[in-house]
Image (cartoon, rainbow, N blue to C red; front, side, top):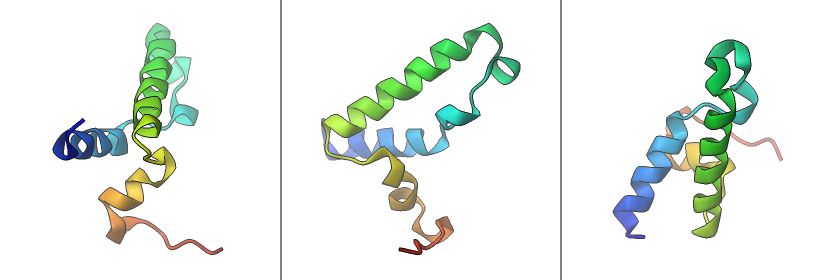
Length: 69
């Protein structure tokens, strides 16, 4: 994967809902499909040595709270 493609994936992932936010009430019968897509993208990021939980901070460092540890 090229650097710009990985950056595009990171940006898209930043705007995806978090898995904990996905439920049948909000997404209807399609909620399982949405969860599968989120897990697929997380897997691709991990395959490229990118921590999905840190992506938002990489893409938007000014709007990410500082860590307290």
